[in-house]
Amino acid sequence: MSDLLSIGSTSVRAYQTALNVVGENIANANTQGYVRREAQLTEISGGAGRYILLSNLTVGSGVAANTVGRNWDAFRAADLRNATAESGRTGSTIVWLERVENTLNTAGISAAMTKFFNAGQAIAADPTGSAPRTGFLDAAYGVSAAFSTTSDGLAAIDSDLRASAKLAVDQLNGLANGLAEANAGLVKARDGSNEQAQLMDQRDRLIDQISQLASISVATDERGVATVKLNDASGPTLVNGTATKPLDVAFNASGAMALTLDPNGTAEDVPLKGGSLAGFMEAATRVSDLRLRVTNLAQSLADGVNQVQAAGVDLDGQPGAALFDASSGDGKIAVNTLSVRQIAAARPWTVGATAGNTGVATLQVQTNGAPLGQTRISISGGVLTATDPVTNSVIGTAPYTPGTPVTLAGLDITVTGAASDGDSFTVSATKPGSRDNGNLQLLDQLRKSGQFESTSNEMVSSNASALSAKRQVADAQNAILEGASAARDAVTGVNLDQEAVDLMRFQQAYQASSRIIQVSRDIFQSILDAVQ
Image (cartoon, rainbow, N blue to C red; front, side, top):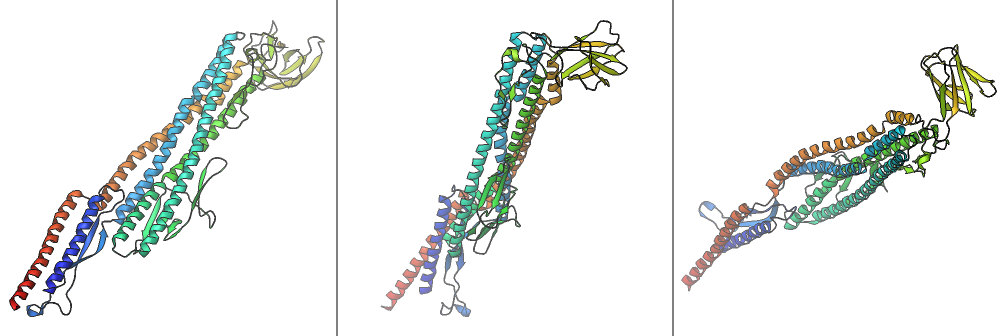
């Protein structure tokens, strides 16, 4: 009877354990990272001295539930980690590209420059009018505001990106240290124990979180101790058992982001392929490139407009003063304090053709030295002759080629069109209050040659195109991620219907085992009663 009692008692203990495991599964059905467990039931084999049946058959000693197993699939887990890393990179890049898009659209650099150049055309229609000149200065301040908004917006994005990257790296290092502690616990845990299962759950939760930040490759030994390498199986080791190497982030002068593993030891650059940190790296490169392009655009526009101003004279007959200042080097343009009279719409020199010229040539003149206030230029035999109209003395001569500037008498002279021998022109300094608008032609030429508006539009469209492409990739990656997650959860997740069935099955087995014990007691009592 002792064998029957032993069988019943071991069975009760085993099914009690099985019921406890089922209860644990039900209780943690919605716990993040919990992996379904099963009590591993094993028959206790019979040995010497066991109850002997006919033909020397022996009966075992019942059942034992000495180990708790986990429903785990390493391959499905690896697929989910890879999908998580890829989705994390794209998702984090999208966040920063969306902020860039909002900044560029809000600032409206292209629209501001269009308004500015159009305001210059309005002055050309009324060179001495105050209203168009006031509108021109207002448009200049609009350009300044647009560039400042863009520069400040991109600087804020860059600053937030750096801070976010630093936080992500700190989080990754913290997770790596936590994984090392879980590995240390797994080294000590009894194989097949519930403690080991809990530590493995903790290990896998940490690894999943690491995969959100970086692309990784994971290997485990027979005890469940994990080794994590960055990128792939041949990459640098982040966690090896209980040892970890810290990751560090830095940004160079241009704003590009770099990750270094073990910076205080054997430093190794890590160009991550996936995870949100890889997205930060990609976004940092895009933001730094865009900031440089905005800075170059601001400098080019300011230099070009200032050169146009310098090439003309204002309403007081003075050389045009610089309108813009982009010397800050951060993509901002300041507007110098000018009055409406200081806008240089007129050419510095007024050219008048002498009556009786038979050719159709015209002259364009710029200052290049110290010319007289008035100079007469005559053309003959492919040679220009400069004469002082007061003294009628020759200042100098120079051969010319149509369309090519020639320096003569402190002036750069360009002849366009066909001239006839004997044609002459009077070149006079433009007087104050002139209604000449010739210098604004240079502003229009600057607009066409500089392609400022198209450059700005290209920056906006380029970012929008990159963002659209990333969103399309994200849609595909999210579908893959959902599929990988469902595939893993199908194995590791808790199915309450299945647990309910197991609960009833083990409950019945537990009750039956209790009945075995009762039957054993009844039989034993009957034997005692018979011998009394």
